[in-house]
Amino acid sequence: MHFALGTTSILIFVLHKTAARDDTCRSPSSDDAGNDRFSCASTDIKWKWDPTSKSHPCNIHRISHSDLLRLYGPLGLPNLYPYPLVIYPDDVDSNNNNQGDGSKYRTRRNEFFANLTSIDNLPKQFSADFNVTLTGSDSLSSHRRIVPLTQYLEEVIIGNQHIGFPGETLPYQLGNETWYLFGETFTSEWANFLQNYQLPSCHSCTELHYQQHLVALSFGIGNIGSGVQWHLHGPGFSETIHGRKHWVLYPPQLRPEYDLNYASRHWMENVYPVLDDWNSLDVEKERHGHVEYLQKWKSTKQEGAAQKSVKDPDDAKDEDNGPSNKKPWECTIHEGEMIYFPDGWHHATINLESYTVFVSSFTSEHVSTLEETSK
Image (cartoon, rainbow, N blue to C red; front, top):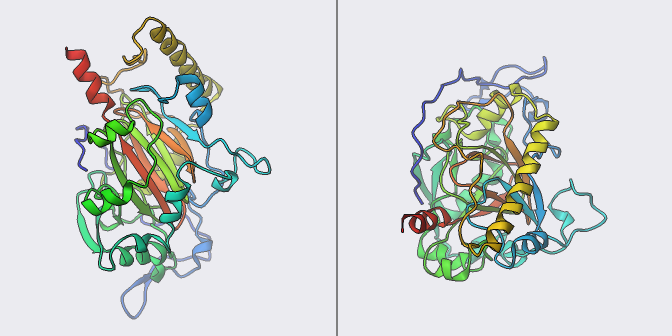
């Protein structure tokens, strides 16, 4: 699927080729075969932002699936919800706390699909010679590469093994040289396979929407540190099936500065650490936005206009206030959880496990609303 990206001016940062290291580590050297190798173990590398950490912050509102339906009815999330939202399964294992990993959920909606997409079972869903189309991880996904699915799975798990980082994409690797399965899963084989996926609960995610091609599904696989650089498009959902996936987002008026030639981990390593943390007022404003929206949605519904979207009072898509000095909206999406990304929000993603699988559902709610408004 191709998306029209907004035209923005981009500040190119000075590129840092290596991370901070212990004094015992030296710059990369070349072996006899000409391969760059670090002169110390990968565990000695001290990245400024560590994708393997289990304690990345989450400042995005989280809601259970049952609470979503209780608040907004059986169709789920209304059209054009104005804020990012994390939706998690209801069957929580009481032996795990709320900040645990995906294993805290005893059951989840797409458990059957998760079984199909394990690293052992996924190749069995396609022919032995099934090829996949990979894209570059730069902001424009500007390069393509076609390889057998089995070859890509092997690259995901052992990629960069020759420099001591098996199954990991490094922050200084160019995005157009970092291959990623996402956005090119729209052939008949993929369509048949994705029929096993249960859609999110939203007003534009019904079976009728899917049958009329008003919901587009995209399947993706990445390893540690992989992910697409900052970009923007219409609204939708992304569910983590295996592994963990970290999301960072800014509203339309807060255009981030980034180097479009690199994958998202480059930004996390070089820009994210110097930004200011959210304070208590930022957190309270984020929480209040959801409460205010719910109140206005209920009021609109009582007035008999339930199908019309509720406009965000802070909506300022046509403004460009430049980059924020604050860290972005962010959260790690665990197995069984999904995130809603609003229309036109800048976002980037970073996979946190060597085998991270996810499905994105791109909705047509922004298009439908425009058509309704123009009548």
